[in-house]
Length: 227
Length: 116
Image 1 (cartoon, rainbow over the protein chains, first blue to last red):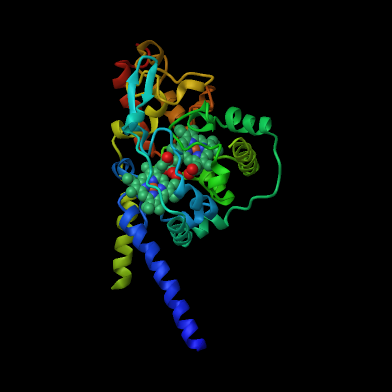
Image 2: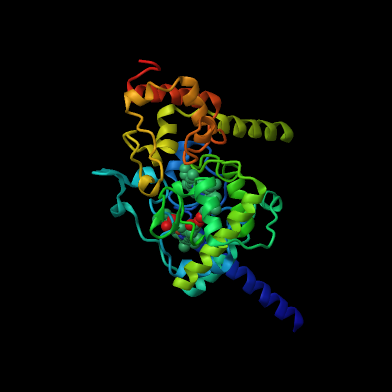
């Protein structure tokens, strides 16, 4: 009897894992790199049809994955490689939104299974282990000073829907989406994660890395409250 | 045998990672986001910037900068030449050789030389 239960629960575990792997391979692999390595040349980087998901378990918050996959909303205002989504305009380059597509939507059950499967992908535990986020608080004004004035990060990132740059992912939702250690590690050395990314390594000091992460937490709380 | 294979594979990977990209491709990837498709300083990111990116087609302004100054600005960022932090340091993404090529690319965009 006991054996049968163990056997059937094993079977259950393996079929759900199989189902998730099935969805990922069938519906996601065409646009998302699920195995690594990251793009090593610019041509490969431009050709990416979606962000690499092969280090998803080192990057995302699982509960965010589950909810976003059911109700995906745009994160990169100018798409994956912005160069494919811009056109000249009267005041300068503009985003050609007609070239941006909506994301596939998953059911609640599929989103949960896929998210659980993605969270197992952790090839960069080494990079994550180097980061330690101390608990701390920062006012929105001080965070903005560090982010905008000291480091010039607003050049490429929106810190609210109507303020900032467009070639990087919006950051007012960053702390909802991303693990704190990932944010710190990516800012410390973007090329360690994505060798050909167009985010520069600004050699942000440790103290300021902490401040940035706390600032993203403040921004995300505000965004969540507004939603 | 296996070791040798692994070594060769590793070597191939690291060589590939270091392969030099052309200046035009690097410009398209790293510079156009702020300096624009036409190099005129009007990229998609500029809307809320406190200082506008340099217009690389402006021969007068560009001829006022030596190749060494341009190299330093690209490698170490705007603050290294007392300009805006909005111009990032690119040494984490580009090799010295690639930066040298980009300086030459800028001279093509401005159709100018230092001091002329």
